[in-house]
Length: 299
Image 1: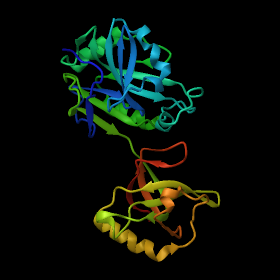
Image 2: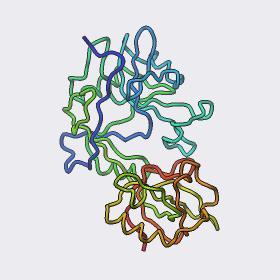
Image 3: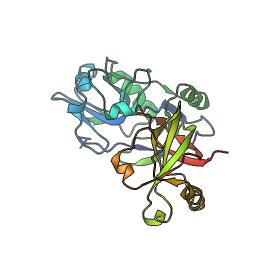
Image 4: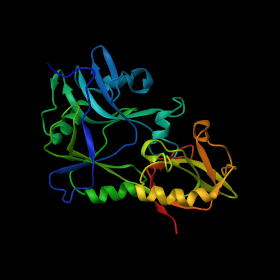
């Protein structure tokens, strides 16, 4: 019996660029929601990574079946929302206004055609079939893949402020539900400096130190709240930081606007005298750090 709704998607393992391009293909890592499109004579159903039906959320893509050159197909891809700067925005995916920010489905794999599973075929053959079975449309496309030049493509994603690359073994089969080293997720990170304005109470192993640093970005003569940084710390660094921060404790919030109530509930404010170097995926549209990791205190 062939694949049917829902299908557990194959996932990539976090890694670094292969030392050699031999045997690898590369795709741009698009910053959106992983989505699988099930096209049949009855219509199109869209599903999330966890297997939930997301069709109603993405009416823009409902007509994709008109561009499928088969009676049925299962397509794997990423649902994107393009921001006004022309780049995919994960923040907009989370809270888009459909009237202002239409969706775009980027298909990168085909798992079934006319009821016949294609997951046992090599990646490169599935990509070829994908271009035959799906014609581009206003709200769906097949982004290019590259069979060499991984380092150059990764550098281009840095220049364009994209999230990174997915490297896929050319001969790899599609294994639903598995996280495989046949697919590697290579993420770009942005290094930036932020001012520490407080910290939240820690729990468990961190009950004697803190949960997350509360950080801000200087703007003119004010400090704009930019979220929390809760990862990247060694135990030694946690202890060193808390020793530096406690003498700076103050009753006054240093940010120009109060952080959310959930943050304030366990926050200890500090005088904004220390600057941290962190790595982030991006700043959200709200100006908050996303996927932030602590590197060190700035000199």
